[in-house]
Image 1 (cartoon, rainbow, N blue to C red):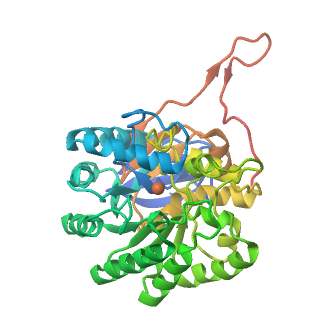
Image 2 (image 1 turned 90 degrees about the vertical axis):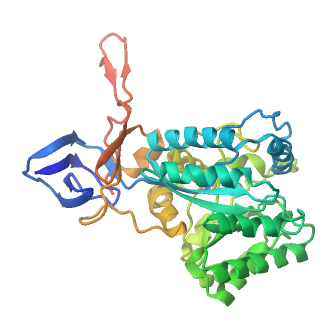
Image 3 (image 1 turned 120 degrees about the vertical axis):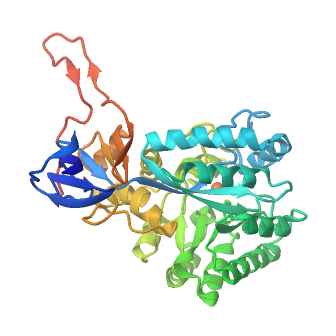
Length: 429
Ligand code: FE2
């Protein structure tokens, strides 16, 4: 007797239609037809069933705070940081916890079951750390939440930031963060990268730095991060986040840098929703897109995983915890429209994010955890095109969330009365 049986699904790698059998939280069979009794059957006929979505870059201490204490008028990163500085003294652990839990509910409904969140540690008391460590415990049954000790105001630029960062790590924060391009000088930025990598190496922790989130073509901390990653052998435990300045580097420098990033083994996490709006603000025309060089990094073998970054906070007024929206924007902003690249964008917000977070490969396979999402789409590209409804979100065999399919009821003479936006057979690769 099975606990759960999904019927006639397609998988992101093109397999299907297949049935997926679940017992004791694990996938016990994937086959064209499975004849077995099951306590629960989900008819996934023609639907895509994928691993859960993963967001390797978020700011949960700031999420859903839009308008507190005011709006970001210029729309720039720097006004966002200043605005966050105005909000910080007003934060309470209760308010941060409440907003974070609300976001986690939204995430689950969107099939987003693993999140790496930066948490500001530049000023004491560590209200965000205290709150998010509690949230991490509370959501553990359904979300893998990792926390990054993030000195938002600069490791050296903010007085006491290093002590606060160490304290946050002692309290149980998982990852060492930083923001070298916000330090006072290039030299202090480079020194912060070295110091943070050494702290991580000493403690055996991963590193995830906001690195060169700038339009300045001379912001070149990612080269220091690659060099330190190689020197200390930190490899796949390191993430360079944002890396928008790479958009503005000259091609020769980029051609030297990208192989160094690949050699180091680190991951790159661009955040297309936020950086398409934050970057290029001081340009007249043309305005730079502010996204890093995704195709070139991919071609060099670097794992690139798109992140959400923000939802309704001092930096971004929109967002919804929807990683398909993130992939959709990534495709437009890079731009990359081949079918191979668009299908890759789907993998980027599932498998790529998991690799960047150091999680086990979440691909659906016999023996693996029955953690998956049933989408109102037939393949990954359709899922991105439609920002497909998550019909069911399943973690270790337990259905956490269901959403009814999006179907329009039409009143048109002589035409079908109902319209399922996913009722279209796209080309099969
Ligand atoms: Fe960020």
